Length: 98
Image 1: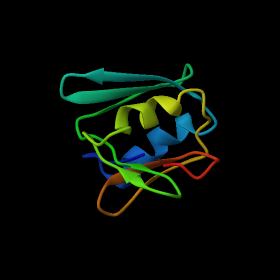
Image 2 (image 1 turned 30 degrees about the vertical axis):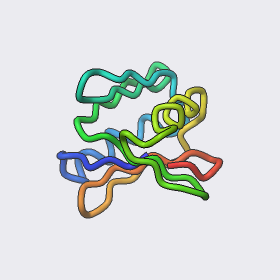
Image 3 (image 1 turned 120 degrees about the vertical axis):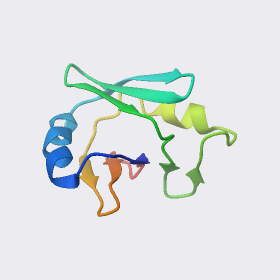
Image 4 (image 1 turned 90 degrees about the vertical axis):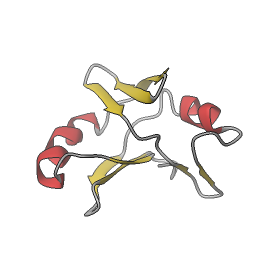
């Protein structure tokens, strides 16, 4: 999953590292934002709808299968988290989905 955050990369990346190795345990769609829960390690609230990326496609909010693709990640373990220079947060899973 990729989303554009608002926190500086240096501060945010250290905080996000706590979800590495955690399972995604919940995906909550709330009117105009999304909450992702990770085991007992916290939650990430995003005000920007993430783009789902896998080897075959990119899915954006509103596209067919978008919500299902997010929910399919439930129980998957986070392999890596990084924040790009443009403040985009990428959460990577072992099977190549982001």
